[in-house]
Every structure is written in C-alpha cells, then in structure tokens.
Amino acid sequence: MNNVITILVDSVFSDCIGVGRTKESSTPFIDSLIGSSLFCKNIYSYGPYTDAATKGLFCGNKSLDDYGYFFGLNSSEYNHYRIFKEEGYETIGLYYPYYLISSKVEQYIDHSIYISGFRYSPIWEGKLRYYSDKLKRNNINKLDYEVLEKFVDMLFDCWMLFYENVRNKESSIIIERIKNPNVDGKGLLYKEYKKYVREKKEYIDSMLILGMKHPLAKVNDYEYEKILIKEFVKSVFARNKAFCKKLEEKELLANIKNNRLDLGYILDYKNRGGAGTDKGVIKFFESFGMSLFGNKFIRYNAGSAMRQMEASMMNQIQALFSCIDQRNVSKPFYASMHTEEPHNRLMYFTYDIPETRLVDEELEYMMPLIENLGIGFKGNIIYQLSLRYVDLCLKRLFDGLKKRGLLENTTIMIMADHGSSYTYFPLRNKMINNFYLENYKTPLLIWKREDAGWKKKYQGMFQAEDVFATLFDIENIDVCGKMNGLSIPKNESGRAYIITEYMGPGCPVMTDRDVWMSITDNKYQVAVKCKLGKRLELSDIVEIYDLEKDPDQLYNKVNEKDNILEIRKLMILLGERYSEISSSARKYIKNIKTKKVIA
Image 1 (tube, rainbow, N blue to C red):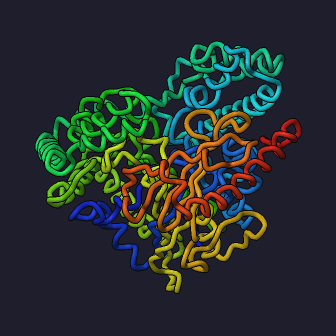
Image 2 (image 1 turned 45 degrees about the vertical axis):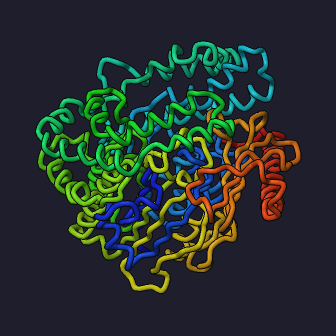
C-alpha cells in the first residue's frame, strides 16, 4: 500500500491556477505535475465556506444530509480518517481544534497535530448567537434546547480532547510557542464542564445570554492570535522595500488600467434590488480599493493580532516531517493537512518561522510572477502570490519526501474546500455568501509515481463527494456502502449538472432557516432560497444566469424565468434533491434525542 498525503488548500478558485489569469504561471510546480497526474478543474463544492464545504468532501455525502453540517463531520458514520485507519494506515491529522472533530472522529486519528489554539468566537458567531437572538425574542423551543445540548456536549468533548492531546509534545509541536504559562486553560475548561453537567439547560442559557463575556471565551491559554510573529513579519517588509515597491506599483497600475469599476453595472445591480441598501453598493468600491492597495493593507496590518490564526503551510510541512520521521515504519501512513494562505487573510510568505533565509527564498520565488503578470492582468495580485507560495511549499514537500526515500511510494492529493471571490475580478459586493461559481469551482490533482491510464485532464463537472471516491478508487480501497461519490476515471464525462446546498450565512440550523441551493448545467445556473417543509416553487428562484452569454454571472435573469423552458426542467431536478433534504432533516429531528452525535 502507498502512503497517502492529502492537502486541502483553503479558498482556491481553479481558474486562478496556472496561466489562466497571468502570463507567468502562478503555480509552476503544480503545472509540472499535471502531465503525470489526474487533474480536474471542475470540482464543485456544496458551500462557499469551510464548514459548509468540508462535510461533503471528507465524508463522501451531500452537505445537507443528516442535519447538514451543524455537527460537522461528526454526524456522518464514515469519514476519510476512518476509512484509512480501518484499511491499516497510521493516520496523521493537521487541523485547527475549533474545527470540532469530536472523539467519534478523533478515535481514527493516531496523531493529531494542532495548527492553532482553540477559538471560542467562531462557536459563538457560527452557532450560539443565532439561538441567543431567539432567546431574546422568547422564541426558543424544546427542540432548540435538545439540539443545543447535543452541540455543547460535542463542544466540550472536542475541547477536552484538545487539552488531553496537547500533553503530548507531538500534538503541540506547532503551538507550543503560543502557550501562555500564566493561564490555566485546562483548569478553567474543566471547571466550566462541571457546571455544565450539573444543570445543562441553565448553563446553555448562560452561554446564550453572556456571549463573548462567558467564562468559556476566556479559556485561551494557547493564544491563537499570536501564531503570526509580528516583529518578524514587520522586519520582512522593512528589509524588502524594493520588492514591496515593485509589487505595489504593479497592482495599482494593472487595476487602474484593466479593472475599472463599471458604474453602469453597479447602478443596474442596485436597480435590480441587489443587497437592498447603499451599503451593498459600497462593497464594490471596497473590493476595488483592495485590488489597488492589497499589499499596503497587509503591510499596514502586519502587526495585527488577528492577521493570521493558523500555522503557515511551511510550518505544517515541517511538523508533518517530524511526525513521519518518528512513525511506525511497518505501516503505511495517511496524512491530512489544511492550509489557509489563499483565504481572505492572504499571505505569500512564511509568517510563523523566523528564518530570514526561508523568506528570502520565498520572495525570490514570487518575483517572476510580479514581473510577468501580463498586460491584461486584473484583480488581486496578492491572491495569485498566495497560490504561488502554496506552489513553493508543495515543491518543498516533494523534495522532502524524495530526500527521505518516500516519494516513490506516496500518493499526494491536492484539493480545495471551496473557491474564492477574493480574486477581485469580477468585482463583487458579496465576497462569500453568494451563488457565484468562483466560490464553488475548485481544482483537484492526484499524483502517484506509477504509470496509469487515469493520469489525464478531465473536463467534466464533478461534486465534492467525488474527490475521495476517486482517491479510494486509485488506491484500490473498497468504500462501497461507506461513502458515496463518483470515481472520476470511471466517469470521465462527469455529471450532467451539479447542485450546491448550504444554509446561507450564520448558524446552519435546518428547522427554521432557508436552504440556499443552486443547480448548474452547461448553460444555466438557477438559485433558490426556501424553507424546508414546503414545496419548492418557481417563486423561490432568486437568481438565474445564462452561463453561455454571461459566464461571469453579472446579469441576473430572474425576471425572465417564466419564459425559459430549461429553467422548469432544472427546477424539477432541484426539487427532487430538495425533497431528499427535507426527508433527511425530518428523520434526524425525529431521532434527535437518541442520535449518536459524539462517541
């Protein structure tokens, strides 16, 4: 059996890799792999942000099955770690702890390496604030408390697992530097847990009432906001003024020339009811400003405590090699990594390892792209540089595996959870919660040394659950009855249409919030918002795009829906999936008291 490494690169719109948008490739090393790999540029995520996207990706099922992604990977019976563990692999996971991998999933991870401290704010903003607002309106009900109890059980389980694991130096190898020895985080957490188990409903009410003033928000001895070494990052910019000057001149001139604001389009957008307020229009100007001054913004915020919150890709690679070097060599290993440089907090050099030589090499690797953007470039140069940084780190990973004699028998898969609107072309007013395909269309590359007929470019459309289905097929791992999805080599033409589905921004509670769904074929995209429990109607359509005439999705044709026969056909298909989601949610809710969410 081959070793396997999977690398999730957060927020990659596949049209931005290679020379799609720049004259000089943003990803020269990845380009060199494509000819000897499986490569597909048309993998579509289910949602436009990580929580909504990764359940389908890592569990091989659709995003809104089994009460959606409210409980993350933990509501699915199978996941990538479990499959590899049960196949005899030694498993390694590099992830941030507030991703909420509970003991149900973590039991299949032999080596958990944390890339951040535990953050309470995403728990509050992503889940609890919604119920807090319901409590204020006296609108919270028995089912809400039952769901919340399952969630808070899982939260404590994940958090206590974190503290159990960081006793092991391996788990804390990245984050040991950011530990505050004057704060007893574990003690505070266990003290709160004892309060919780004594009276769960009362404790949940306190969480909803106090918000970020709750004692749990103070359990922060691993200070995630210090992952970036501020003084070192400032020194990088101070030492490389010529580099910054050239970069900043390029991004300013390129976008003034090629990426001008289309005021006619903005006015048309407002007249169609876009965003509903002038604030929505202002977002266009903010995005344009960021395309002009992106690097200045990074330099200005270099000392910000919140500039980065997870370890850099290079730091993760070093930690991975440390684990690999000490592993049980009698077993193959499976390693999973998640890096965020192309995320909205864009970065293009290693910000958490204070090694000048390392960063000098990285900036030198950036320079050919800056010098050869091409006369037609428009958009976010910093985003392209973040991809080039990932490209260099991948090259270092391959070199490190080769040096260790492991490259010959290691399969490497590079994927993304979702795409990105932070490319700033087209300019958008909403960067995340939208139906624009750049937020969903992602690349997939699987490299393996042996010669094989599956090594080619695939042009068809595929969904997130097809990614690991393809990897397992290539590795001859039988997952029939455990995970769904199509193997790309066995379904070369792809799917006739793809569906996206998530719960919009905020808490993904399925009992009383709209489902955001879209269906896309080779000609049209149709998007709807609709509450579960009612029939999907043409009146639920919020956006329609003619992708042949308007590939950038600039002109919403929702007012023409009654005149387009194809739209009715797509709505029938979308309605079938909508009915499946409704049925799955009803079953989960019915069994919520006995559903085993955590081990």
